[in-house]
Image (cartoon, rainbow, N blue to C red; front, side, top):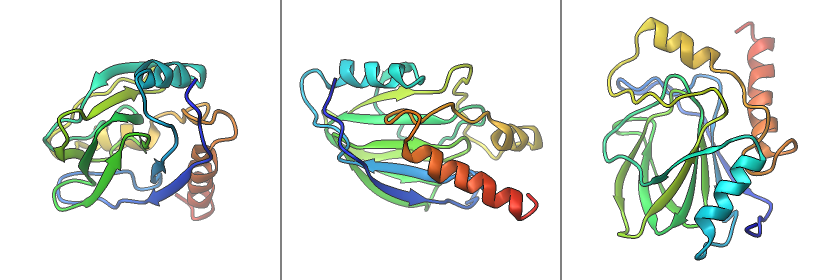
Length: 181
């Protein structure tokens, strides 16, 4: 297993922007410097995700066009290289990600690769039963409902039952319930 350190978590709550819905309640979580990259990073991250109930689905990069998923939450482990990733849609928030970082995107979150190193490699995963449709236009009312009701994952893809996802996402859900959402 890769050596996993306690995360330095950046929390980004993105509002709807341009044609991208983002997620009105759940923030993006950026786990910085979580693991040490190396020759076995892909296999080790795939095992880590599987052990925490998020089976890896693919190894590649991030598309260079803006898109979001209306039916799935997504976790992205950056195993090699670095990239500039635009979150939230055109004109959104530009973040630099490096090997060893992990991004957790709630359903509806726009993302796009705005430039990366030649060796940039990503392991992507979704909770069981969720499929990553690729949406490149404004959402329909049905898609907005799907984003709002995408099932909560059972645990954090990196830290399991006691991970940051639970405190940041469950906290968002409880706050929304108190406000009558």
